[in-house]
Structures are given as C-alpha cells and as structure tokens.
Length: 145
Length: 145
Length: 116
Length: 116
Ligand SMILES: Nc1ncnc2c1ncn2[C@@H]1O[C@H](COP(=O)(O)OP(=O)(O)O)[C@@H](O)[C@H]1O
Ligand SMILES: Nc1ncnc2c1ncn2[C@@H]1O[C@H](COP(=O)(O)OP(=O)(O)O)[C@@H](O)[C@H]1O
Image (cartoon, rainbow over all chains, first blue to last red; front, side, top):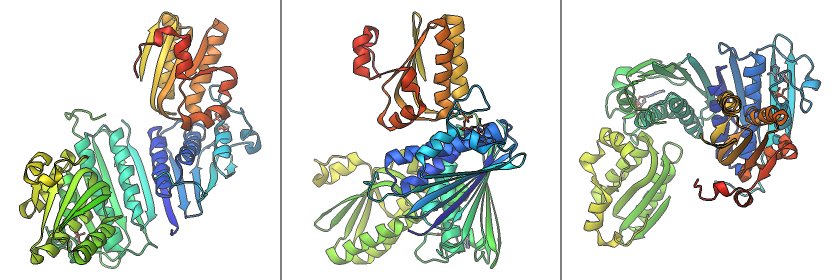
C-alpha cells in the first residue's frame, strides 16, 4: 500500500477528542489492524489530544490542536501538536502517576508508551508540545476485517 | 454551542473519501443531525472529495485535498479544496448529466445541490477547485441521538 | 458482497458502502459475469447497503446500458429507507425496475426460500 | 447511562465512550448521589462500555478516594475483553474489586432478575 498522509487541525474543544479518535480508528481499520490494537491506538490518541486541550491550553477552546498521520503497510506514525504552555520537565511528566492536576491519574504518557511501539515527546515552555507516536503493523496478526 | 473548526488535508487516495465522510458524519452526529440529513451530508462530501481526486487530480495519488469545516448550532459549512486541473466552464459542469467522463453519471453537483442548502463552486483552470457547501441545522427536527 | 448466479440471472447482495473505493471492482466483476458466464439479468439486493453515491450508482446505470442492447435487464430490490432520496434523484427508477421483497417474492418463486 | 440506587448502593450502567467529553458530568452526578443520597457503595457495570481512557478511569479512582474515608467501596463488573489491558495498566484491580457477572450474581441476589 502507498503512503497515506493526513493532517487534521481542530479547535481545542472536548468533542474533538472523539473526532480525532474516530479518524485514527477508521484509518486503522483500513489498515486491517486487529481489534485490540485498534482500541489501543484509540486510547493513545485520546490521551495525547486530551493532554493538549486540558494541560496545553487549560481547556480554553479558542486554540488549535493538530494531529498529523502518516501510514503505510509497515507502520502508522501519529504526531499530536499544540502551541500551548509546554512541559517544564518532560522526563518527570512521563513518569507513572505524575500529574500537575490532583484530579488526574498521571497515566496518559504511560498509556501512550504501553499502547504504541515508540513515543517521543518534544516540548518547549510557553511554546508548545509535540508527541510523536509510532505503531508498527504486524502482519502475522489475523485480520480483523 | 461554540463554533468548531476542523481542517483535514489528506493524500488524494480513494480510501480517504471514506475518512472524510466519517469525519463529517461523526461531527454531524455530535450536532444531533437527524439520520436522513446525516446521510445526505455524507453523500455531498463524498461527491466533492471524489471529484477532486478523480477529476481534479486524474486519480494521481501524490496530491492533496483539503476539507475545511466550520460548525455551530446554526449551520455546518464545508469547503472541499484541491489544486488540480480546475473546471473550464463551471456553469456547464454543474448541469445535470454533464460529465467529462463517459463512465460517470454527471450527478455529483446535483447531489451536492440537492442535499445541501447552499452550494458555491470556484474554479480556475490549471490551478484548482473550491466547493463551498452549507447546511442549516433545523432544530425543529427530532433529534436522532 | 455475496453473489449467486442462477441460469442467466446474477443476484448481487450489496453490503456496506459503495463509492469510488470499490465501484470499479464491482464493475469489473459484473462485466466478467456478463461476458464469460452469459449473465443477462442482474438483481441488486440492497437490504444491507449502508451508503451509495454517484460512483456507485454509475456502476448500475453502466450495467443497464451494457445489458440493454443484449436484451438483458436489471432489477433493484429492497432499497433501505435512508437511500430512497438518492435513488429518486438519480433517475434510475425511471429506467430500472425497483421491487420491494414481498412483491419480488411473488413474482420470482426462485427466491421464496431465501434468507437474508 | 442508566443508574439505579438501592439503599446505599449506586448501580451505574456505563455505555458508549467515557473520556474527557463526559467524565466530568459523571463525576458530578456520582458526587451528588454520595453527598445528597448517602450512597456508600458504587457498582460500575461495564458490559456496554465501548471505550475508556485515563480521564474516565480517573473518575473511578477519584470516587474510590472519596468513599474510602467514609467507609464506602467500589465494585467493577463485567469488563469487556477489549478493555482488560487498560484496566490492568491503570492499577485499579489492585485496589478495587473486579467481578464477573456470574460471581456477582451469586454474591448479590438483588441483581438476579436484572436484564441488560
Ligand atoms: N500537551 C501538554 N501540554 C502541557 N503539559 C502537558 C501536556 N501533556 C502532558 N503534560 C504534563 O504532563 C503531565 C503528565 O501527563 P499524563 O501522563 O498524560 O497525565 P495526566 O494527564 O493524567 O496529568 C500532566 O499532568 C501535565 O503537567
Ligand atoms: N474538483 C474538480 N476538478 C476538476 N473538474 C471537476 C471537479 N469537479 C467537477 N469537475 C468537472 O465537472 C464535471 C461534472 O461533475 P459532477 O456533476 O460531479 O459529475 P461526474 O463526477 O459524474 O462527472 C466533471 O465531469 C468534471 O469535468
């Protein structure tokens, strides 16, 4: 299969977490991802986009989040980008149970890491955050189509 | 409801017609569009995106189509933009049964016009085509949620 | 998509979404059955069709045009309610026979025992 | 989402997707039942839950933390197979009781006649 590129930019509204998830899920189904991996991909995207809206933009709906996807028969790479507050200490932020919000679990990055094959986070204070996640497509899995 | 803006740019691959349709359908469901209007919205988007890929880019997959959506509680506006071959005579192109491809029905614009409340087409030869479609949300319809 | 050929009649049970993604495959498959297997009547069963656009409708019209000079014909059965309007707009009901299942069951005893 | 209160027990029948879109509404609704209606046991029925992420799981953990000092408790029932891994990773099974429907039916005769 040829390389497919998709780039979705959207208002930082909670309902767009659903839209981003549906987009990735539709693409994953086209790539014949097994149902379990499809669910995992959805969680990873949900966490990254939720973080951009909740942490990056403090739930202010007048900003924009971008999700950039590149897929081929070998892998699917997803970047989630915001131009929000940024992360002071990325290493610390990625630790289990670390959260700057007492009401949250601090597991977003743990889920992204567990459900994707690769995770990179680039962030600059007061400038924004980019999360790059890759999932390799394992063709020995039975098709879920 | 606040204004929501979404902008999806994607490779001119046939499978992305499904992706664009799913995006609009998910958004329409969030706006509580009745099921029939949701189906109509999907057809309109399918026609516009198919035209960009088939006619605008002659099915060459190395180009990009953009779908730009702005929605509120009052209306949903959708622009489908390509940088393809353009249309020589827009008025003629929009007539029922007119097609430059003998295998096609020439009904794409008719469907867009019938299923949306407004349709505008801007096109420049060798530069590209922009289709702007608007659907007003009729709140007297029973919710299909 | 399931299909069944009985003498010169091809039954096609359309499923899911029919658009530019899969319209061409359907066209090729039908044309092969017309040319190689002598099919002269095509029955499109639309019970499980979720979506169709002009790319999909074009395949049906194209097969009509191909069969007409051969003395063949096309039938469309069980269009789901949410597809009525696009069928109407397409103009196909003016040239192709549309049948609901009940009526077609009476007309065509072959289909009597058939299950969806 | 359907709910049912029996004495001090709140049964929540989660449906669809639980994420940042609706997590806060769920939190507020549960906290009202704890504060105004004296709920001390919450049973999350997950049979029809299609999706959950850390925003959704956070609501469950948060209610656990709120109920513990009041002597209350939480139960989770019928986690669908596709959610096993995220439940496991969340660590919730270490502090909250997870029950399959059969087991919970035996333990809780109130639910016997209940239909999904
Ligand atoms: N896009 C982002 N912008 C700013 N800060 C972020 C972003 N993503 C994550 N963070 C920071 O990293 C912390 C840990 O994130 P995460 O593991 O997802 O847990 P949680 O969302 O539950 O806090 C967050 O509490 C926040 O401080
Ligand atoms: N995006 C586009 N780029 C170039 N030409 C287009 C585009 N959209 C439509 N056209 C032209 O307009 C004609 C009519 O379009 P339409 O009504 O959708 O029918 P059909 O797609 O069946 O040909 C097409 O045959 C094509 O020549």
